[in-house]
Image (cartoon, rainbow, N blue to C red; front, top):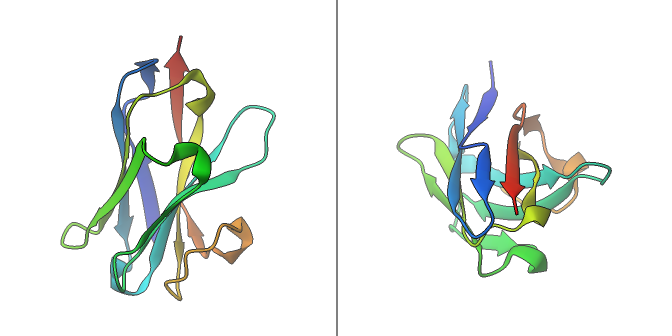
Length: 124
């Protein structure tokens, strides 16, 4: 059974940092693109970052460039999202998702597997 499980510290002060983890089971990262999406209250879910397993290329939405860093540890089947200089507008439920053709898309419909999400709240 394919599973993605997100974890990370939930409540952080503005200006702080946190690292989210996405642990996969039931498949290996070697052939997949892994992305992080987020959904803020009252807003649509948006893709924020993605990493390709084939060549390690990373992608970021403009609003998070310079603050977010995605990385993977294929030996642990885990992808991380390091978030620095947190802002209240980063408050959202963060999801990781896997795409089986190793294509980093910003369209959530292109992703085949999803985690349950983890809440990140940034206090001002």
